Amino acid sequence: MAVSQAIPITRHPFANGSYKQMLIDGKWVDAASGKRFESHNPATGELLATVAEGDKEDIDRAVAAARRAFEGPWSKVKPFERQNLLLRLADLVEKNFDELSQLDTLDMGAPLSRTRAYRLRAVGMLRYYAGQTTAIHGETIENSLPGEIFSYTLKEPIGVVGAIIPWNGPLTATIWKIGPAIATGCTVVLKPAEEAPLTSLRIAELAMEAGIPPGVVNVVPGYGETAGAALAAHHDVDKVAFTGSHITGQSIIRASAGNLKRVSLELGGKSPDIVFADADLDAAVPGAAMAVFANSGQICSAGTRLFVEQAIYEEFVGRVAEFGKKLQVGNGLDPNVQIGPLVSEQQLERVTGYLDIGQKEGAKALAGGGRVTEGALSKGFFVSPTVFAGVQDNMRIAQEEIFGPVISAIAFKDMDELVKRANNTTFGLGSGLWTRDVTKAHAVAKRLRAGSVWVNCYQAMDPAVPFGGYKMSGYGRESGKQHVEEYLNVKAVWIKTG
Image (cartoon, rainbow, N blue to C red; front, side):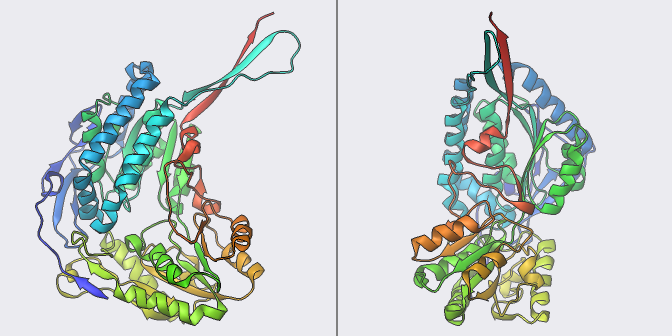
């Protein structure tokens, strides 16, 4: 494992240790309580910013602003105008993309080599939603009632959306929530993760620069148990769009019962990634490794359960371990770094706890297995890419979401048995398989109970292709036409004409 040391940079104004307010009704304001919290660089421990800490009173103010905008001027803005606003925002995101990618790296640790690669995805999502803005329509439906009765449907914005996002990809997560809201004519109150709020606040600045009216996009940083809980339970919020853990997702469902608000959830996963003996192993080794090690394993759909056919198990898992050992770990601001830190000390404790559990359960760490503390990295939250061999299905490292750079390699022989074992999880977000046999690929893909199946690749994403989960990985979809539908109500209209 190669190690990179911290490097000096010119700080962005959003990460120079200054104070950042929240955005409510087009104005930058302090928290009603006056509280603030600190955001630190997980690679170095340095203070990036002090941020206004929102709670229930701030959520009330933001929801009221969103309601006024929704029922006021915003309701009269035509699709073509909303499209232009999204296109202007897309242009601004593209123009300022380097600074946005740097903010993601500073605030949550993902290497620049990763955050810079999201340019096409971030800008593409906004332009995709802009295209969808003018494609929203109902339909005429011929009914079978006697007489002359005309029936048709309207698609209408659902209203005020409460959006709650995680810390593992602030830029794209923010766009994934505000993009469809603007496209459909909704308004939104966004609660970014307390671990990484800075990119969301900067996008809010760009949204105002793009001309998006006051109250349409509001951003209230704060903690989940205060600001997030208040948003989920608010009786004037019509929909909650949440990405995060299944535990929090369950809490949001319970909180939504008060006014039966619409809920869409993209939750955790323990995804199977299956390698058959007939696969192109030269492609599968890096593919399977980075299905987990990318973003230091902090991806809901990471392929953390690596099922390998028995005939190639020892060779393949060994090669994945050697690949992991060669990855460069360090401060993500170094463009050569491939693995950055975990987002926080809490996450470090969680992941290293699972490393201990895996070894106590009898799994063998062929690579990694502990924290990285060399040189300046001792100040950050670094864990080396880890490959556990000899993993059994019932081990905790094979059943529970770790959210770190940890692969659990499991051997299999029979394909029918494999599918049953791959599906034997409470989650169902992602899955992958590697094979040269197209018939086998189709057959296994059909039988896997997951929202995405990647064949001979992993984590491929596109704004036009829906993404979401089965089972405890949530419901609803993001991206694609299905995503836009999540922000719309369908109204049936009947007119008796004779």
